Length: 192
Image (cartoon, rainbow, N blue to C red; front, side, top):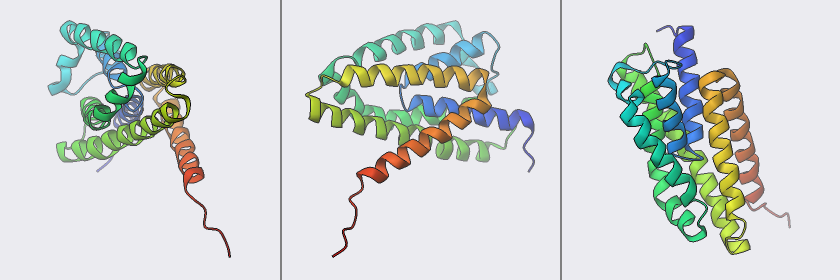
């Protein structure tokens, strides 16, 4: 099976949007909806409803509510408990909606593994950071973390749609940072 340049770009867009889902669930869905509505990004036929004006309104409202809710210190941790499984679902959805010209089995395998996996890994990491912030600062630093997450989600969504190659590089960089961060947290074995 050969991957056309369009298919490769659609995979890059999907992974970029899935990474963005790891920071905010509705920002990339809203961005994808707008991109489809304005014909920047074609969607798979069964997902074209995402580009409808009704979807734009619903996803726009959900995006605003989600962004504002993460600025409430106790609510942000509560949202994180449900956001990890939702991120896996949303990451899978954005990947399935955007990947084109592939066999459905390959599309769904990519969507679940690359889309859902990327979104879950990033969401799990950001949730851990927020929990650590709550424990060490009593939630005072949580709005700063929320601002960074929202900004990163917006930037990732825009890059994924307009410059997908740069978005995939940024995803790799974020993955490297997460790897280094968790490697620092891992207790080292002391020599006796």
